[in-house]
Amino acid sequence: MSINFKPVGRKNPRDRQAPAKYYASINAKGKRNIRFIAEEIADRSSLNQMDIMSVIEGFLQIVPKTLLDGYTVDLGEFGNMGLIAKSEGVEKEEDLNASHIDGVKVRFRPGILFKDELASAKFEKIATPHESEVVSE
Image (cartoon, rainbow, N blue to C red):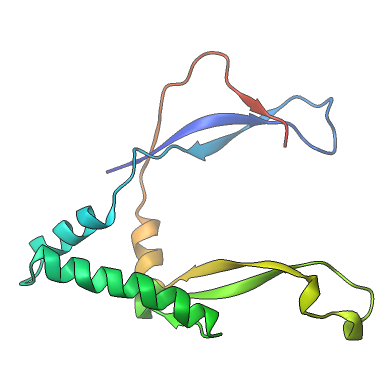
């Protein structure tokens, strides 16, 4: 299996007159849903697809709750998840309070097993029209 990528031109935000540089942009082949994952796990275990679907559904309910309770979710060698705050900056430490927090994001930190799998990634450039899109970000 390979990961598809295409070139995307990006302008330098500090120098709009400079020519665009092209960077690799991952191009997803599609989506795989929970049912697909459950089928794949069932093929590799003695459990049936419905048992696995039940476990995955439980996992999807418990992880957000655990994060919102202030805990990091440790998934062993797969990695861990935690929340990070999006907030406004203030001049003085004592002036910072909860009203400055705009929201939270989930941060996933891959573990050894995940990193080892990603290290074996193979890439394949896909065809694009001659006039490549240039993003001005």
